Length: 369
Image (cartoon, rainbow, N blue to C red; front, top):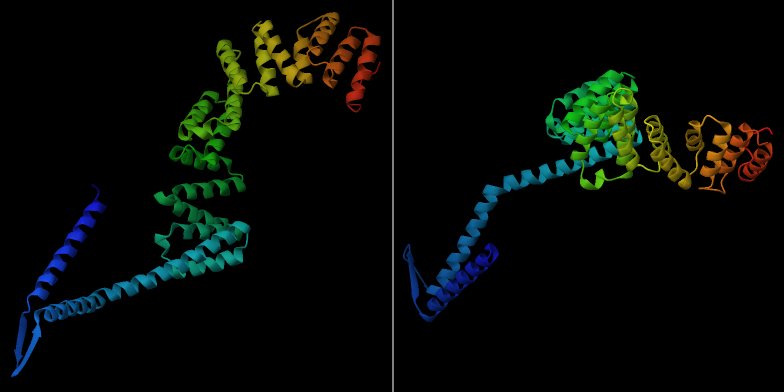
């Protein structure tokens, strides 16, 4: 039995008791006599009790008004000021968003009139946005620094400082703010992306992958398994593979195969994967990757890589025909055979394939037979 049912039973019990009491009083025809200053008043007990209860109700109402009315009036006016202040704050933030600094400044003044600055963190944000619109970066940075000191506005302050640093091209400071924000909230896109960009530019691929893993753990499951996240992960893995290949070819192989598994249809990753496998003399596996990619979307880089390890022109022509057979009716297949045939001295075949390529993309063909 829940609390609500208990209250219902108590209410029914009280009503029954009161009803029984009034019934008993009504059934006993008693009289109450009141004597005051030689005046005698006689009334029935039921009428006396009813009058007494009404008197208590009126007295309670008067006491309530006297005791609680000031607080009620204060709450009314306080609520009205809060409503007007928040309306001004909302209009000011919207004005700052669309670049209307005059309205933003006007609404900022109105919001300060109704709201306490220390109790409403959005006021500082509106002030900072207004100063940015007025090109007053120094005062805006000062406000962002104040926001940075408070827990409730720390991340907003860091983002403002980051944007100001990027606008003034002080990239080292921007990275410092991004790193601080990332430490507080790894899921912030602007923060972790800035950290990843810096680590990638510095060639710190292991650290970049660690950052990526922290971000993945901070994100909800639905946001982890997206094409964009897989693409970013694959790029970081490919960067690591290229960076460590000369020193740790096994690690490079593992990283690039993982990257290719994440984005099998991304051309640059396919080229890097096949290139590393060729260097490791895993020709069959590399050929298979290029052939699968050629079937889906033929690209000249695939063809160049596939033929590149063959020293003889005749051998390159043979491989070109084989690769082209997996996706025949395309410009890239015809062009690949035409170029290989020209190198091998097969002018008739080269001319034939060049004409075929012309039917697909006349502008692209630049073979002189």
